[in-house]
Image (cartoon, rainbow, N blue to C red; front, side, top):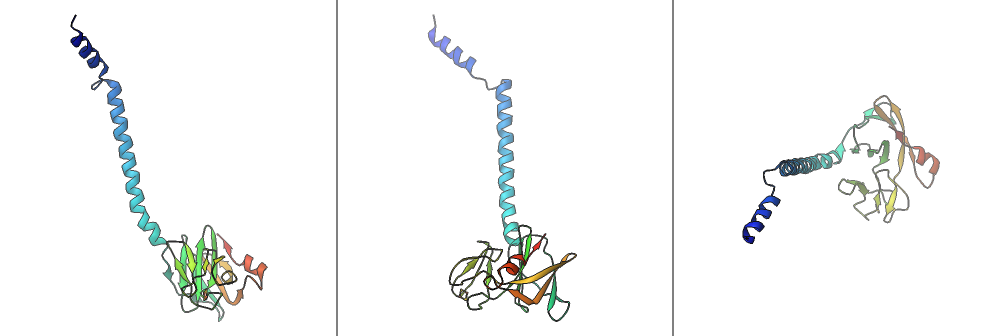
Length: 179
Ligand code: FES
């Protein structure tokens, strides 16, 4: 008996290059690979857009009265800065805040660090969450918040009513809009 031929025949029988099962497996592999490639491409192309959306924007408030300014409510999470009024408008996870631009420690102008998604003081490096809550550093309280109210698609900021977390904890906590 030709044992070599028997073994070769068995190996040929085990191979399934052209059979239906192999074809289905090959198609599934190609489909999964295409889906993964598309997902990777989408993630790569979406990343700069998301990062760009979090870069601070510079805005000017519309004067309503001597002490009130109006700003359009931002359509997405992010930070807007009105240098002239030293006001920061921050939309974050369904809430909207108006902060003083001045660091609570020694009044240095705060910066928004979009990569880390936090406010940071360039002088002594105190840091704060997007909600203005103190994280660490030399400051001894969170960022000061202005009283805010809603007027249709705008937020009205009362520049005469600035709340400190340590002096007015209840007013400070309530000083935001739920969107
Ligand atoms: S001035 Fe901001 S931490 Fe000192």
